[in-house]
Length: 184
Image (spheres, rainbow, N blue to C red):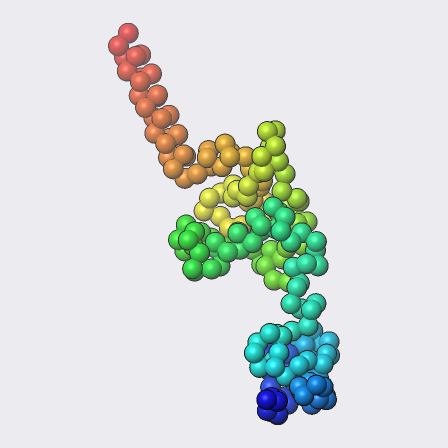
């Protein structure tokens, strides 16, 4: 059974805006569409209606432009964005829920390129293990000057729990020294 003709002119499907009917091939209808980026392409009617085509190839795959898709650096970047902006993330309460944000420079279409320019490629420690993103001030945002690539040890020392324990240890040592001096 041949598909039914539907006038899709002027409708939006993802990033596509349907301009006009183009032609019919093998019993299927094709439409001339313009993507948000301005590119025009002929798209099958069933691809639009079934949600298979949502924009031109350049707009569908913007992450592939920088060549870092799937690398540890890009993965760290995505995880940082996710925990600060996605309320469904398991880490949201510890980051975005506490008001931790990612600076505007590291967001949007050029966000990763800016992040890469500021932070560089994710390095390895002396044992060959990958370093991870660490905020120097745990209550500060993800922004240049407050983020570094850190080893696991640096991460542990910079946790709020660790800092509180270190203060308690220092107080206990100070009291112990004070008691020894008084005992003399």
